Amino acid sequence: MEIEEKILEPVEIRGRIHSTESFGSVDGPGVRYIIFLKGCNLRCRYCHNPDTWDPETQDLRTAGEILDVAERYHSYWRNGGGITVSGGEPLLQIDFLLELFRQAKERGINTCIDTALQPFTREEPFFSKFAVLMQLTDLLLVDIKHIDPEVQKNLTGYTNENMLDGMRYLSDIGKPIWIRHVLLPGYTDDDAALKKTREFIETLNNVEKIEVLPYHTLGAYKWKELGKSYPLEGVEPPSRDRVENAERILRGL
Image 1 (cartoon, one colour):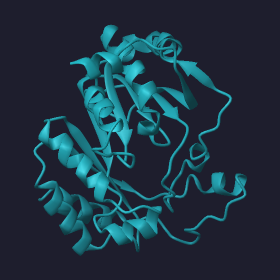
Image 2 (image 1 turned 90 degrees about the horizontal axis):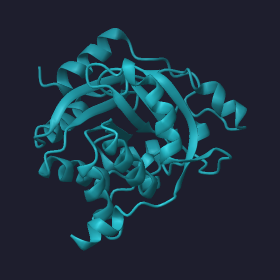
Image 3 (image 1 turned 180 degrees about the horizontal axis):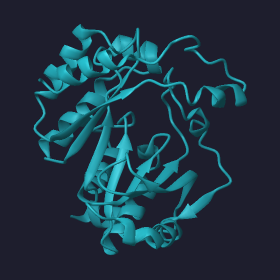
Image 4 (image 1 turned 180 degrees about the vertical axis):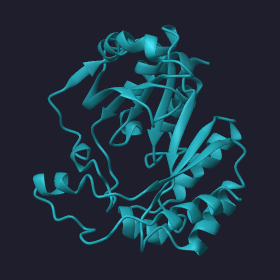
């Protein structure tokens, strides 16, 4: 496949890095080395990493530089551990991801992407690159923001049609995903929307796990440090009962 060979040609490309975490335990199976990339188009009201939105950074690294450091922790990667690329939105740097995961597979490293699929499109050149990237990806953690496109637009600045289409494509090719849903009181926790989300999940054949992530305020201080007004001032985290209710609905229990 000529286009695939061209995409996989070794290139000296540098990723725009926000930060890394050596012993991640909640971003995929096992213990993982987490690479947080800069840049995100979404403006989620509950975002706890608004400092990743701006794509500009002084920390530019090649795939080899990232993996040389990551492999220092290889002995801890039991039970399917490896690397997870998060953000920000990793797919905005798809060329870097292709090179990073190509080299990771040469080193026998398990690969995972934490994404909302916001950049997904079936148009070129993205779609061909994404198809090749999926051949190099073991798992995706996919965040469903809200099942209603207009509610999601109010919550994040973007509707969800292309993101849901991206999930359908991943289902069509049988690429394993874990679904994540942030439970935000007054926005994403109503039973009717949760049931519609469950109906959508039931159309997919590649979902290995469903995680409900309770909203928290731990990132509120970052908004203030960036000179931004925190949009959810006064909103409290959901109760344990509401979290368990969402888990039952989304998991079809």
